[in-house]
Length: 61
Image (cartoon, rainbow, N blue to C red; front, side, top):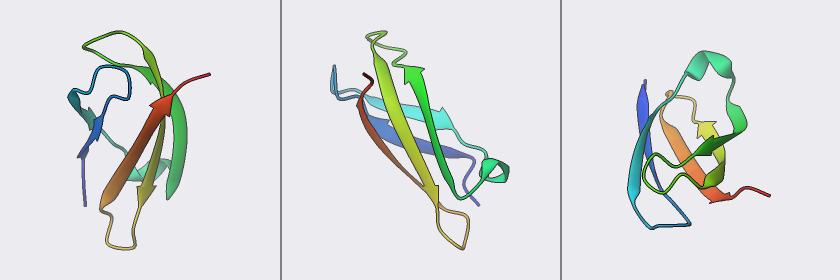
């Protein structure tokens, strides 16, 4: 089971590592500011049946 995941900030291009919580559900959506450039990102985290996370990020609106 994953406890961390990575995404690429769509604003600055940096690779960002985040903590993930599989107990929050198989699909999670939330806004989080990039710790490098401080711009908001809409994150979508999806967990597979084995508990591995994949993250997609796009600029928050």
